[in-house]
Length: 142
Image (cartoon, rainbow, N blue to C red):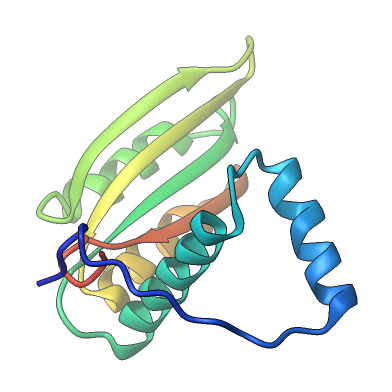
């Protein structure tokens, strides 16, 4: 288990141009300092590793953009979600305009389950765009 108050200092060697680009990027993202940006990068790296190792449960946030006018799209999306109701934690439905909707779905499970559910939803006829954002349950992330 990690403790937030245990801070370790370390140094790195980095190419000057790469550092300049990094500083520019963290400024655009409104980071207060390099340390916070590097901590976030390390966490992202560890989350990706957690997904690659396929051990334990992970979280994912899936966004779907679709036209509700596509025949049976709403029913198909709901059918898939109900088939995997042990993994679907929550959904939010947003009406973007008269034709288009966005669905945001929180999915929990083993990495392969979350990917499989996401792929089955994204591949439905009528889905214009889908994106899975990988996350963690936070147990191994400080």
